[in-house]
Amino acid sequence: MTIIQDSRFKIQKFKRNFFVVWVLSSVLFFLFSSYTAASDVSLHGFVQGNYSFSSRASNPDDGDFKWAEERVQLRLDAAKEPLRLFIKTDAFYDHIDEKAQIELREGYIDYIEKKWDLRAGRQIITWGVGDLIFINDVFPKDYEAFFSGRPMEYMKKGVDGVKIGAYPAFASFEFIAIPIFEPNNYPNAKRFYMFDPMPNVTNREEKDPPSNLENTEFAFRAYRDVAGFDASVYLYRGFYRKPYMIPDDINSTTKITYHYPKLSVYGASLQGRALDGVLSFEAGYYDSRQDRSGTDYTVPNSQTKFLIGYQRQLWEDFTVGLQYYNEYMHEYSDYVKNQPSGLPKDRKLYQLITVRLTQFLMHQDLRLGFFSFYSTSDGDYMLNPEIKYNFSDHVWAAVGANIFGGGESWSQFGQLDKNDNVYLQLRYEF
Image 1: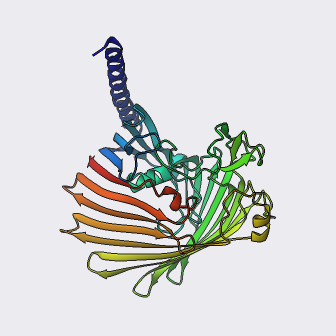
Image 2 (image 1 turned 90 degrees about the vertical axis):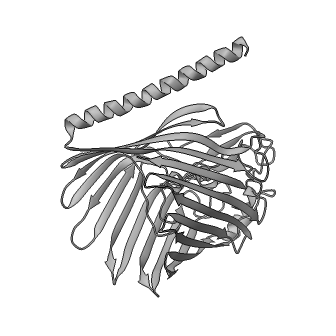
Image 3 (image 1 turned 90 degrees about the horizontal axis):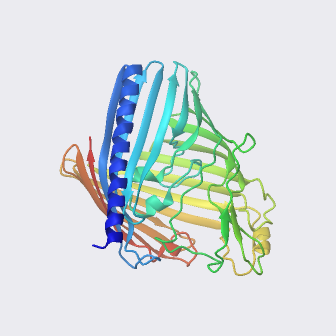
């Protein structure tokens, strides 16, 4: 071992020891603070290993793993009426980037009254009735986590905001304000092959909407039972969470700026028992406020999105779920007319079907799962078979694969064609 290697080893060891001490100190601090202020305190969490091996080709940076980490999560829940404190914190070591990090997944305070409540802080919000299809769930997602074979809970990202719930007798309401914009997370270009229309342009920057009153996102949901169906209406005013490119010169581009155009969404959903199963409908109109005419190629056109889903148990411990989804682009002729040559063109009507099959065996300790996306308009697909086994009430493991293909080199799943991976999740919960 050389002096330099030895020094690096000592530095890494120091960092890891510091990391452990920091985590333990944080836990003790939270426990002590909560004990003195709350009457009901619980602490849970897990230790987890998560590894995803690139099975078809090495990564763009010649690495072999999409994901490789050990992770510890602690969940502190402390309540003393009418207040409740909840903190979910992850600490992990990423073997690919060779770094340790602390991540606050959720951290909020609830104030609960009989007819209303308030939640302030970082929180994960889920709306809509789709199964991995999001129309009125306009809150941020982590698609790198999804395509890398991480546990499904990591597909959702938290937002820093305030949620107020009101529950009068005739209906329930949720109002959300998010002052700090949080974009979706997409696969890292070093780990995933993704379509890039201008790969030679390296001068790039990203501009998030500034945090101020004008850019604060607002979302509203009203829901109640209607003839046995859970009925909801949704309103949202904010921004697209996917970045869109603005080249400095489309004919001779030297710099690309990514921005998040303004968006409003108006939608509704229904879900209830029918046809011996569960039937779901959801629709939403995406109002692209910066380009309602459809003439600006740097801003997406307005769209109408629709979903119908059906889930049924065919025999004991076996369920099947089917979904049909489409997106209709408005002002399509103006979109085609103004789209620069050389850039791919989206379809006027995008269509997608999904299938989910789930079979439990061995007193439900063993779960065989299969989920697939297939676009009938683009011809691309994603397949996700998975086997999960519960060794005990505290230990489980899952092995699965993500397989991509079909379509074009720029379509949603076709561009991921070289990113097939096999993953392992192993968790001890306490």
